Length: 263
Image 1 (cartoon, helix red, strand yellow):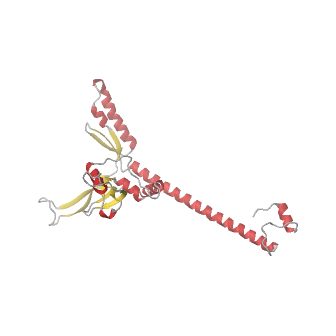
Image 2 (tube, helix red, strand yellow):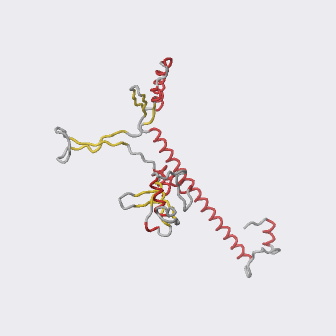
């Protein structure tokens, strides 16, 4: 409800009536109803503001978590430098690793008048993400197939585990919003092997050359279990009239495309 001071004076003095006054409604009833509507609108605005604030805070928290994950990926568990002449060094900072790599290049540069060595392109530095780490150390048992004299058994695995739940959740949202309902992500170009072409002809004909007259086909993207324990995700074809009779895989898609479809 929005009234000017002049309109309010006219209303209270009985010199004018509001156009939305209900039949049989007194001025007091009218004002109570309008103020109640204004109160409800204000409460709705407050709820919308709180929801927007909460969404903003959640987004901010997610961004902070992603930033922390990104920083962890950049830092890893250390840094290394290497060139194929036999130098491998580990460092506690990225600056030291880069400086060591620059020094290696400088050594090759000193010999550059005789021609640059191809090995200069092997100079690298980077982040150590994981390291082979001993796990499961235990005494040897009778079931262990080890050489005589070995008293303990262990395994090695790459640690620490790399997990980025906030980034993964964000990318899942990106996939979900980027691909409309009923659509999936497929490669821009697909190579069809001779086996794939034969599968198309088997299900939809080849003009009565070998497999019969042409029929309508059904192309679909998804997972197909061929009953041999292998689940194939990709582009498949089946006869449109009898899709239950089976299908042929035209092109198998990579794992990252599978994730995009499921998001």
